[in-house]
Image (cartoon, rainbow, N blue to C red; front, side, top):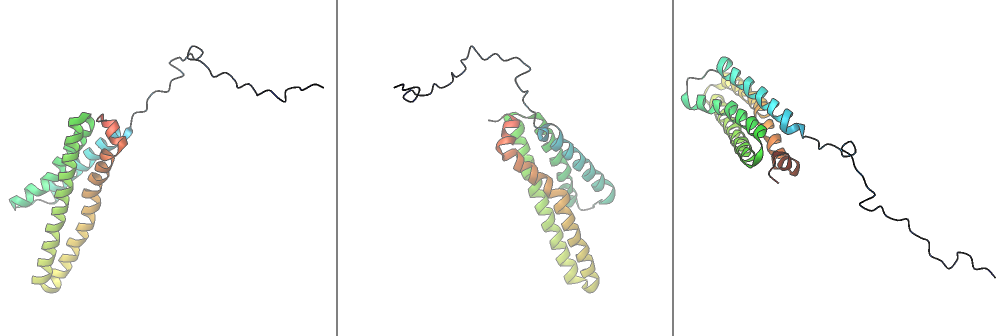
Length: 170
């Protein structure tokens, strides 16, 4: 009576050894550069900061020195945030985080100043003040989109694992 292969275990295929694996430069994929660090955020920061600077200079001139300084912090901090992102490294990451946080804080304080002005206009000037207050509140909605969103998204990226890796801090 023949037993056959019933009692034998199946032989596993041999795993390739290190000597069997030969790689060429064409086989190894090139590391992908994160476009957010090199193109997207620096370009957006430059575009937004330039637009903000032109608008402050031409459209919203202000005679009040504290308001003028406050307004000019937005494009300056946005430029710094973009250039620090391009610079990279631990120092660039820290500068970008600091500039983004200060730009966000400045945007929040600007929104608070506008809301206080709207409340003053509405309380003092009656119906005409209420119309001016609505215009001011509309500008707050635009400020959130045009001033606060870029620092929020860029800070979120810089604090993420991908952002820290792209900046060279990990």
